[in-house]
Structures are given as C-alpha cells and as structure tokens.
Amino acid sequence: MHKLATLVTNTLFLSLLFIWQNPSIAESKTQNKPAPQWQTSKWFNSEAINLKDLKGQVVIIEFFQLWCPGCNSFSIPLVQTWQKKYANEIKNKKLKIVSIHTVFEGYDYQNNSRLKTFLKEKNITHPVGVDKRLENERLPETMKAFQTRGTPQMAIIDKQGNIRFNEFGGFMPEIAEQLIDKLLTE
Image (cartoon, rainbow, N blue to C red; front, side):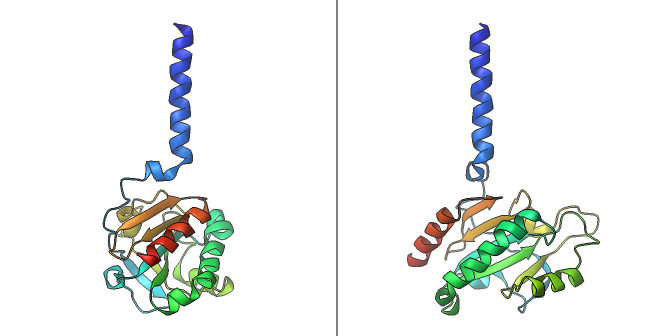
C-alpha cells in the first residue's frame, strides 16, 4: 500500500511539474480563440493601434515591464532580433510587432516618463502601448483579457485574429519562429 501511495504521489508531482514546465498546456484555454482587443492608455513610437485593424497580418504581442529581468534578458532582445529577421514582412505589412507595457506592480516606478526613457535607451522603435489599468484594480485590462501569467509573455495572432501562441516566461524561440513562418504562408 505504501508503494502505491508513493507511486501515485510521484506521478501527480511529475504531472504537475510537466504542466508547469510546459505553459502551452496550462494556457491552452486561450489558444485558437479570437484575440481580445487590447486596452491602452497611451502609445509610444506610433499612433493608437487597434488590433482588429491588423486582421490580415500576423501579429506578435510582447507583454513586458521595464523592470522585469526576464523581459530585459529574453523577450526584449528576442523581439529586436525578430524585427531584423522579419524586416521585409514588417515593411510589406504581413507582420506587426507590438509590445504592451503591462504594469501589475511597482506602479509609481514604472511610469510613462521612465518608460519613454527606457524605450530610447533600449532602442525600441516598434509600437509600444501602455496597458490600461482601472483605478483600484491591480491587474491592467489587456493582461486580464489575454489571461497572461506575468511578464514576459508573448502572444502570436494569426491573420484571422486568433491566438495561436500565448506563452509565459522563457519559451523556445525556435518553436515560435516556426509558427510565425507557417502563419506568414497561410
């Protein structure tokens, strides 16, 4: 009986660990569903952008915070790499890269003035929207709508406006790039 209990406990532990290590399993509830409209209070490097106006393009959305270590070491450099790699697709309006500054902590520090300086220092030139947060709400609107788990988070939207990728943390960029390449040819 003790061996059976140990086996069940270990199996449960390993299953939960597998799901935790594979965010696509945990987040599959948003994948292949229509992407919600983002709610922003301000835009940098662009006029206001409406997600529904980008139908017909593949859209990469990076959710980040300026003080997020994973954003600074992983998602921001990755997005900048993709900007170079997919420069022709961006120029020809087949692909759009957008970042959403999703502040759910450190509200006073991560203000628009610091964000503007941060974008200049990091040489971030693509459109960046500031996620709208209602007064007395901890989580901003777009973060809630996309059911993000924090930052960094990356979403890829297909040409029809459906979420095809919605990953938290450090995922395998090669998998995302394969999907981007596939979606660009559909």
